[in-house]
Image (cartoon, rainbow, N blue to C red; front, side, top):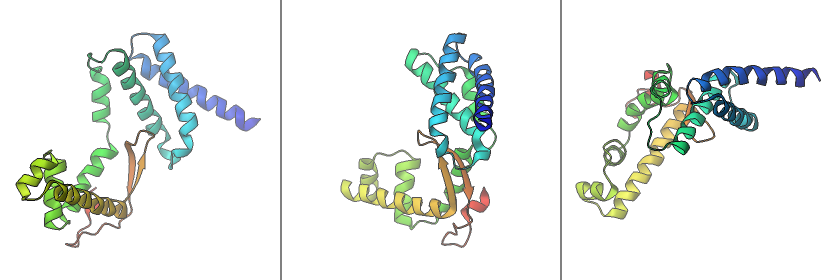
Length: 193
C-alpha cells in the first residue's frame, strides 16, 4: 500500500510539472490536459524500456516534447512549431544525438576508403544511390551493396564504442562510451566525446 501511495504521489507531481510545461506551448488548458494524460500513459506503459533511471526526467520531457510536436502536426500541419519548443530542444545541453554525431567522424574515417566514400556520399552529401553509383563507377546494385556494408561496419564500430539508449520512437535519448572503439589508426573516436 505504501509503494502504491508513493507511485501515485510521484505521478501526480510529474503531472503538475508536465502540465506547466505543455500549457505554455499549446492554445488551451484542456488540450494541455489531454497531452499530459497521453504522455503519462505512454511513460507508464514504456517505463521498463528506460535503462538508466537517472535519465527519467530527460526521457519524460523528450516524450512530452514529441507529444506537443505531434499535436501541432496533427492539428495544424501548415503552421510552424512554436519557436520556444524548437529552440529548447536544440539548446538542450548534452543532446545525446549531437554528442554522438561528434564521435562519428573518427569512426567513419577508420572505414576502408571505398566504404568511407560510399557512406560519405550517401549519408553526408545526400546523393541518391543512383548518383553515387555513377560517381563511383559502380552498378546501382553494387552501390547499394557498398552503402549497406558501410552502414553495417559503422554500426559495429559504434556499438563497440557506445551503449546507446533509444526512446519508443527510435530516437537517441542517451549514450555512454564503453571505451571500446579504437579505430585502425589507434585513436579512440569516443575520446572526443
